Image (cartoon, rainbow, N blue to C red; front, side):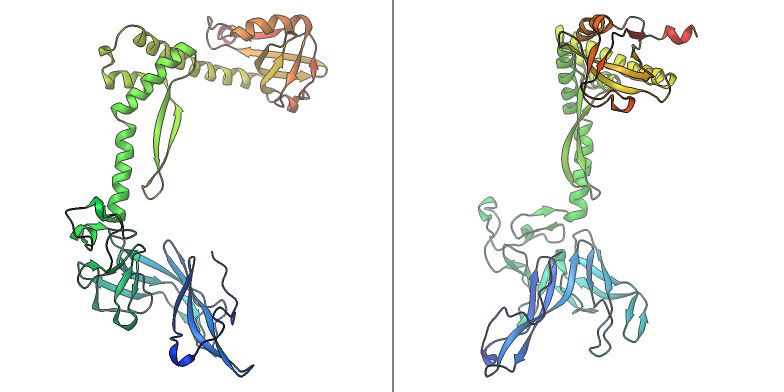
Amino acid sequence: MSVPLSEDEVLQPTYTAATYDYRGTAYAGNVEYDISKTFINQYGGYYIDKYTLNKVYNTEGYTDGTIIPDETNYRYGIRYNYYRRDHLGNNREVWTTEQVNYGGTIPAFTSQRTQYYPSGLPWAEGTGASVQNKKYNGKEFIEAHGLDEYNSQARMYYPAIMRTTTIDPLAEKYYSISPYAWCGNNPVNAIDPDGRQVLIGGPALTNGLQRITAFVVNNSDLQDIFILGSAVVAGITGGEPKQFAITTNDNGQINGVKILPATSDDVNVAKEGLLLPVVSGTAVKNVEKAARMTENAAKGKAFEKQVGKSLGNNKASQVTIEAADGTRTKVDFVQKNGGKVTLTEAKGSQTAPLTPNQKKAHPQIEQSGGTVRGNKGTTVGLPNGKKIPPTKVEIIRPKYFENR
């Protein structure tokens, strides 16, 4: 939130009161100030602008009033005001919460109600027209001296004739439409957030379409191609397949893309959805290999969890140990009871092979010990750089539990 200005701060040093219209509104970020004049009886007397905090805006409405009700100046206490909007983002009503007044407590009520002509011009009928001036599309409606225009940032909009007072900065994109037109001459089904770009349907429909678009793309052939392409690469490199996810925020607006692991089921669904048989040879084999690897990895994780549970709580997981020749390998579980170190590796099947680093490092660790790298062993007294004595790495497979 912007920091309010100090009262009586001199922003306009001096002026002639007879030729200067001192009344108005000033904005600093999301804060609105009322401007008035104050006479300073000093050095012959002069006027300064007095800025009084009026409203602090947020995405759902605004706050006004004063922290402490002021009976002398008839000021309310803090009031919270919420907009009720339609599909175009027009502020139809302002709902004001219960508030403490200088004369007591006032219950919640509707402080403003506005109806619009199709062009966005407010009807004369309504409630509390002057309560706040953000109306059609949530834009500021400026009525001073009969101006009756909306401030739409890039240009001013005059709703009485559904035209702007200056041309569209992006008029060359719309040769068939007048550069003074508003929303392509269709303000009932479209909005123009900043006076330059027309959006069909307004915030509600636009955000809904973005949510639908994200869902459709996330479940489209494009997703299938992405998964299968990553599966082909994974089958060659030994990695894991990936999938993407177009994400949306709570309002339905697309806000990013995430890359996530794809399961073997995702790969199989992608194969069926894309009719993969039209692709043949090595690519198919790599996809099938990646699917099997992904499935085996999931089984391995589940078995690793089972082994970890059987070892109790006094253990560290995924500890990196460096062998004498510099080869490093991660050991699933490391324990230290007294001076004895125990190393345990879980393999999810009877035939799951050791990795190349495991094949090189395990015999060396058994013969001459190793060195802990990283901080994952700290919880069991094996910090980074700690030497461990010659220790055999115990390999546990599913039959270990079948024989118990």
